[in-house]
Image: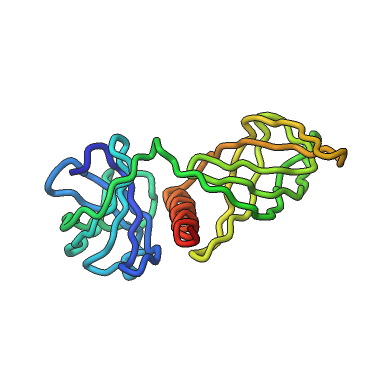
Length: 215
């Protein structure tokens, strides 16, 4: 079922995030997950797992996990601490979401951007998110940023909060009705963890559902 997968996120059946794991032998029947020690007790033998497949996209499945085995030697990879290998069997395919087709939703969320000025000093700038997807955000601010300028902001959702990092792709000055000009930006994330990507995707999906219910 999986073709090119080396990472996944595990959730409870209620949609609560439990752990981020490494996937090994994803193309085989004997697929396994690599857990950090502190995550082992969070996960049940039956869970919902979102696999990040390089070809298919996000593959969500109901899975069964077997007895754990402590990993030693080179198989532990770059984690550098006690980890465990757990056999994983896919029991049911729940859905597949193509990553190329990132869902974008319109929002209006005030945030405070954290970036650095030309002297390298950390500064904070007010902004408002105008749209969001798993690829990046569109936002407005009265402050001028440069293309490729790196910034971060706290992304707050019902599922939790996380600091996202992004860089400016484009900037456009806007002046409306004789008011003070402001700037519109497009940006893309970088260094996004599996958990953060999953959080953003879950947020955009829930926002889309809200809009459908209103209509």
